[in-house]
Length: 183
Ligand SMILES: [Zn+2]
Ligand SMILES: [Zn+2]
Image (cartoon, rainbow, N blue to C red):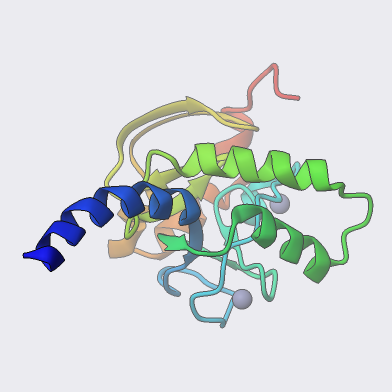
């Protein structure tokens, strides 16, 4: 009886605390379709999209350990605070001039980006955003281009892997959709 009562009291008290300390982050899911990274389950690296999204930087995810790219990441809960993951990445890559405030801002943006996802979701990256594999009617302005897609190309390519590179690895896809106002 006492044990049961204690559970009643302690469960509501500890659950929100756990929710606060566990954060979501992206970890490499697999090597499906296309992968230059041979690591397993390492954390992803924060976005490094440049002016050449077709090279893969606009549609692949980089590994924080080896910096090489893969397609699919899994949303997982981690006990490591995002800000600590950010600090580790800065240290690993030997980045200079990144302040603690920059890392805090990155952690906040990342938490907001991942808020719509649940642990266990498999996601892919496209032009500044992450999408679940089952996303449909994708219409958005990315960093580089304006996209309108019935389904995520990464998901469609699971049945036909060369299709992904043929579409998103083609400069013309991006140039044809380039945002006139992109920064
Ligand atoms: Zn690139
Ligand atoms: Zn790797």
